[in-house]
Amino acid sequence: MPTSIRPRRSVLYMPGSNARALEKARMLAADALILDLEDAVAPDAKVSAREQVTAAVKAGGYGKREIAIRVNGLSTPWGMDDFRAAAEAKPDAILVPKISSADEMHDIARALAQVGADGAMRIWIMIETALSAFRLEQIAATAKDDKTRLSVFILGTNDYAKETRARITRGRAGLTPFLASSVAAARAYGIDVIDGVYNDIANIDGLKEEATQARDLGFDGKTIIHPSHIAPCNEAFSPSEEEVLNARKVVSAFEQPENRGKGVLQIDGRMYEILHAEIAKRTVAVADAIREREAAQ
Figure (cartoon, rainbow, N blue to C red):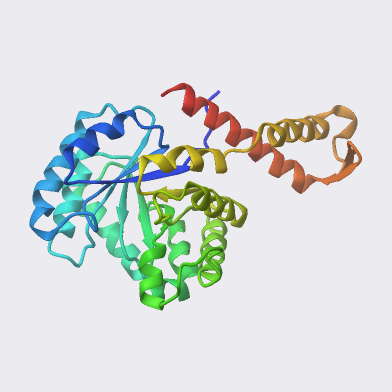
């Protein structure tokens, strides 16, 4: 039975100006793809990249991979045309960069209405400015307004570090408050949240360590910049077989007729409350969604 959870363990940026990369993406095991019209595209290539990306989305062939188009901001010369073209192409989501206020979310809502975007299309936003760190709750709260369509935070850790002068070191001590606050704000309003990229492409051990940290902080997945990072992130953000087995046992125990109404159970020598049963249910649902996603590749 399909679940409402959509895995976003690995979210791969693909430059919209690279036709070969857009084609290759159809065969990669990433959960989601961000077809980029913003940072990865030079100003003189913006228009051609837009045409190339929208043509690729319309052509399809990406299977169950979730597709987002990262547009240029509405304040740029390309923003509104990007919105219009993306709405016509009908990706799963439009990703809007450098959001720093709730007012900008309402600007997005008006732009969506103006271009007649399909009702199923969602909005993802980049959280990557110093101002956004002070306004996380206000921005996340706009998800309560259906017109904003806000469903995912994507953290732009490189841009945030540039603005704040924080150093991205092993363990990310300078970024951890920002990371944790972003997760808390997103969760408070039912928004998924994806960690920023890991820059050292060849250092797979370092990537695994950072992905594990992100998972433990509560992130749903990680944005990545190279196909070699897909498998480590898929593994890091998937519950282990042992976790799933234990979660199924907890769910089953609380569902037994003799345990109905009980707030606490002892299972294999450990105490579990109802809140643990809810966590276990989500673990099982995530595992089922991942299995369904991988079977459809």
